[in-house]
Image 1 (tube, rainbow, N blue to C red):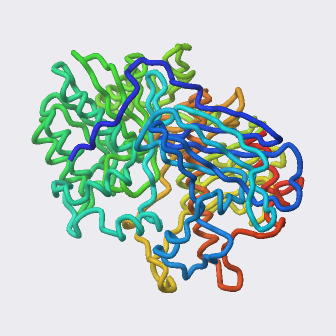
Image 2 (image 1 turned 90 degrees about the vertical axis):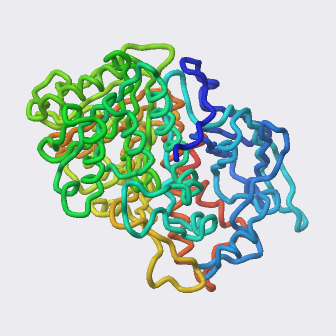
Length: 571
């Protein structure tokens, strides 16, 4: 079933705030970064703490005015190990004024259900006579909720099917029937789909609904993986009002591929004249909807998320919507070129270079590139130079780092750069040998899920089947500086793909957009890193809050990763 429509900022409205706020008092400083239905809080102290510093407590006041303390997954008395059950972990969650966060940043997702103005009061907590007292308290306020800035919407899937959170909430329930099809009823899975698909799912179904409800609406579709029953049902309902370019690479035409059934269904509804099958040199890899009126493109949906069960409910992905005819016209040009002749695409004007869009008050500064190109340098050269020219930080979520080209080489070399803080997640660590435990300049965490050989009673997780889980493709450069940049789209950021695949790549020079992508990168890395640490925790070395001053020493020791982390997120 289509997702319930999200509460949205009216089209064309200005961004409610810049997506960033900071405040300080009594030697405590707080920086707050708006995420997509979340907030990333970073803390700092103007001098090294005195003895007894226990961490930070955070109190949230949502729009309804009912304040509450955020909870910590750890406390001072309960040891957490790989044997700790989900029920036990939930039971020991403790308000942060009693179990302060012993790290210098924290993310909260309270604003997803209730958008509006949120105030967070952060307190530096000290142990005194076996009690905890606040030495300083700083409030910071931001407008939070699903992200929209003017005529740009951006959203993410959770990417957390393989997680203890999914175990806790849905008991590892399957996300589709054992026998695959493209027309099963999604009603039994609706709650899971809403949770897993998060804002990205709402954006996809809102876009399709608005286009379908438009009396003059027509839809052009680029689809790679395509098997989500409700999306296919929506596409079928357009009939002859829809045209599509579908990938027909071997993985989508082999026996058992759901894309064979999707193609047959759409051929029947839209007609042969409205369908094109192809794969350029390798893949037709775009994931795009274009809303048209009387043949003119007016809006476009793009991003990394395939229109599939895995794309929305298993993988970490992003979706962007530009409610803008100029942007949509470029995507339509790429669609038309592909529809008429894929063989000539790399020689066409649309693939010739970056399309820098003129500055506008209702959109970020941005540029677009469409592949395949004659050479990967056409698109990737700009991205590689941005990473190479970073002055503060590079944050990323990239499916694979084993491909070729300058961008991935620059990413893999970040750990050796003493001037840059790097933080990222990938499907595997192959090709990233420079990242070592204890590296002072950054951290790279691979996706991993718990299946076999897990010691009971730790709950086993599910992977959602074979294939990628970290499917996102984005890089954030200097996210909290005036030169913040984001690169994202369907491109895998590898040279081979830019020369052989139909793809799109987006450059966004915008602080609020950089903030939400940075928050997403941090959330993914911290999720998988925390889980990796928990898996290795034993009764001899359990996870527990520290009752000594040892925990904060590295945050104030030059050359340590935690020192750089503190300096970057809350300078």
